[in-house]
Image (cartoon, rainbow, N blue to C red; front, side, top):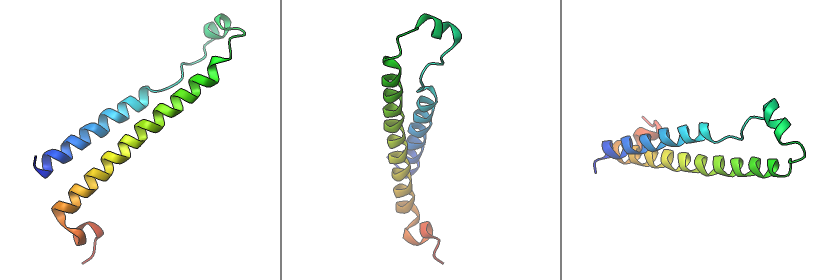
Amino acid sequence: MTYESEITAQKGIISSLTSQLKQTRVPARTINWQHNNIGATRNIPQRVLVARKQRKQINLGVSASTVKILSLRKAILGRDAVLGVE
């Protein structure tokens, strides 16, 4: 693979992970939900913890892809070009 194709692949991974991140949330507690789940609050904190864990894993994937993009750019441009040294 060329550097260009690897960079575009990593950008695609980042965009898919960010879309997953937007969909990872705890369901809203509507009035109907509250009425149907009176006294069943035990699982709510667990759902919140699971959602946090999923978000953390997705964010780690995004940061790993970002690091890969930076290392590919370093390989293309060289150390001085990335650091901005003239």
